Image 1 (cartoon, one colour):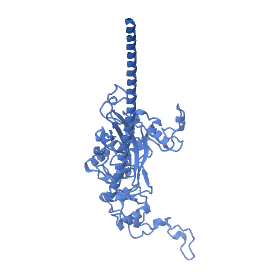
Image 2: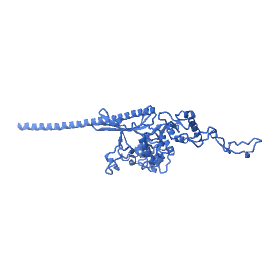
Image 3: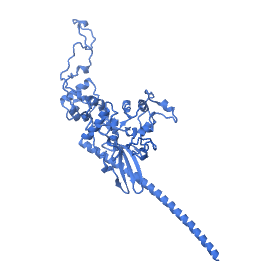
Image 4: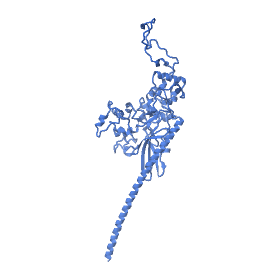
Length: 475
């Protein structure tokens, strides 16, 4: 009997042990499930925290535009480096930050603020000469970029068209139109991931340990403590500004405005207005910089010089000299007959006056100006790409805005050492002093679990609204 009772006890103990193992296993599995659910919930919260960061940045950008328009300012630095607004902002159980990678002339690292697309070179509008100045850009690659975006199948010297891309495995066709995203550049012949992303292989804008250890682990880097982000940090496809002045008013077109419209610009006298009209009767305004060459207009009509043909071919009436006895005159147009002479001499507009006037004038009727580079935010590497800007001048521009403050308009470049009127004329049609397109990189975090989510959004701001152009959630 005792032996039987002992066997039953042993059996019960085994049952208890098995049940204990089963219960512990179920509890462990339930704990894992709860952790997974919690982490998933935290990831969702981190995502919406990142969205909150984007929305806050959009609201501040819109308010900044309104404030600048009211004060007649093209540019303010308020949101480019604003840790008070964008660093570790607490919301509920988590926090968010809006950040951007700092350019090398800003010291590298990360800065809490927004980034403007007008600080970059737009590959949809840049010339091959401008793109050729990007670091490690080959002439053949620049030509291939032009071929990829143009609308024809004619191959530029050194470039590549549809026949090349059709020979690849798998084959594909070139865009034959504007690039939709900057990453589309990776489809172009000659552009690889190393050129495009540089050392930032995971595309997070942060110098990770594996990106600063030389050849120890991929990706290959130089181990200098500075993140080289390749062409991705220098190019865009979205930059564009309205053809308005700092107050949001349409600019006066030098090519077509009448005297009344010209006199409506503060600082324009009747003498200057008439000189502008006289100028464009003789030649075309290529840029606002041409105002530097403006001289007083002669109020008297210029007489037809001797030896100028009136353009008639009729026979002279009876009693008059024969055609051989009449001095022949070369043909002149009606416009030429009515053009006041432009005497060489005193210039009506100097550099200081041009700085006062430049933002109110334009030489095109286009409402939008895509691809302009903001001289207040562009890095030295981007400024060098512009025609006429040497490395020395690019550095002088950066130094000037750091010491003297933002450029009020593009004509203020003339106050930078090395920027002559000739240099300004070459670059004036490619630059702006204002930005309207911005890149917002927002990261939401839940400190208790370490969950985090990052969103990158490109927006365009105007006085009515903020339009989202693109959004990435795979960072």
